[in-house]
Length: 478
Image 1 (cartoon, rainbow, N blue to C red):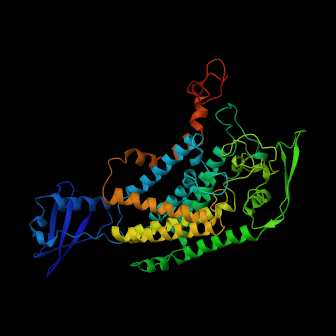
Image 2 (cartoon, one colour; image 1 turned 120 degrees about the vertical axis):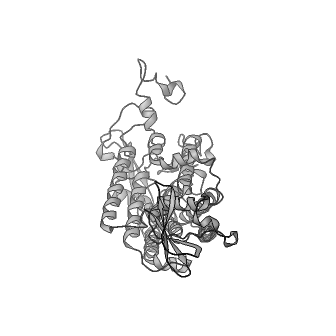
Image 3 (cartoon, rainbow, N blue to C red; image 1 turned 45 degrees about the vertical axis):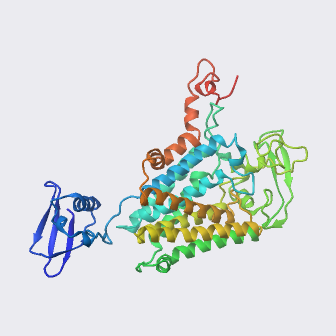
C-alpha cells in the first residue's frame, strides 16, 4: 500500500491511496497543507497510481491548490524503484535491426560489411553496441541488491548459459544453410564466439558492479567517479594489460597446414615469417599468437576476415580465389572474438556501466544528457586521434582506438534515443523496435546464427535440394 507524506506548516497529515475506492484517504488532523509531497514508499505501482490521481482527479484534496503553486512536486525516495526506460529496449532493438541489415545486405553492399582489416564500417558497430547496452542494463539491474552472494550466483549462472549456448551455436555443430549434416569434432570445436565474448564481458562487469562500488552520496560528476573509482581502476588495468601484451609480446614465426584435418595425406604446410613486436597486421599480431598458443589453431574461426582483403582475394572486398602472389597467411584461421581482443570488449561494457550509473543517480534530463555527451565526445575524439597517430581502428583486434570510437558512438546514439523516446515522447514508431529489443537473443539465434534457415531446409521433396530455401533462392541450386 503506497502512501505520501505531506509537508505542512504545523501538524502532520498522511494520505493513503485506496485502490478499491479509487480515492485518497486523508489520515491525521493536519490542515493548511503545503503542495509539496514526498514519496515514502518503494512500491512503484502505488506511486504511479497516486501521481495519476493527483494530476487528473477533480476530487483530489490537492485540486483546490492555487495554480501559482505549480502543482504537487514529487520526489522519489532512495529506496523507491523507477520505471523502466523505454530507450533501453529501443537502443537494443536498433542494434538488432542493424545486425540483421548488415547480415543480409553486407554481401550486396560491401561498403557496409565488416572491414577486411583496418577501418570501421557500419557492421563493425553491432558488437560494441550490444556490449554497451549490457553495461547500461547491469547498472540498473544491480541498483538495489538484497544479497550480494545471491546476485553473484545468478550472474555466474547466466554467464554459463550464454557460454554453453555460444558453443552450441557457433562451435561448429551446425554446418550452415547449404549442408543438412550436423555435429562437431571436439578436437576442432571453436571455443570463442559472439555469445562467449558477451558472457565474459557480462560476468566481469557484473562482478565489479556487485562488489566494487562505494557508498558516498552522488550529487555531481566528480562524486559519481569517486563512488565507482574501483571500477574505473579495473577498466584502466584491463586497458593497460591489453596494450602491454599487444605491443610488448614477441611474435615468432609460426606455421599451419591446409586442410586443417590432421589425418589428410594431402595437407600442405605453410610457414609465416614474423619475429616482431607490436605489429598490427593480419599475420604477426599478438592477438592471433595468444589464440594459437592457448586455444590452438584448430579451434579458431576457419574463414578469417582478412581473406577478403586485396592481398588474399581477387574479388576483394568479397571472398574469392587467391591471387597468384598471395602471402602465406591468407588461409590461416583467425578468431575475431579472441582472448586478448576480448579485454577491450570488457572495457566497452564498463563504459556502458558508467552511462547506467548516470541514469541511477541523476534524475534531471538535462543533467543526464550533459553527463552522457561529454564522455561520448571525448571517447570519439580520443579514438580518432589514436587512429590518425597509427593505432588504427580495427574490429578484429578490438584495438583501443576502435573501442573508443564505437563506445563513444554508442553513447551518442543512446543519448539521441533517450531524448526522442523518454524526453520528447515520440513513441508511436517504437513498437517493433521495442519488441526486437526485448527479444534480442531469440532473434539473434534464429536469424544471425542461421538456425531458422537450417530448420526450414530440413523439410524437402524427394531430394534435399528441393526445399523452401531453394525455392526462394537461398539454398543450394541443383
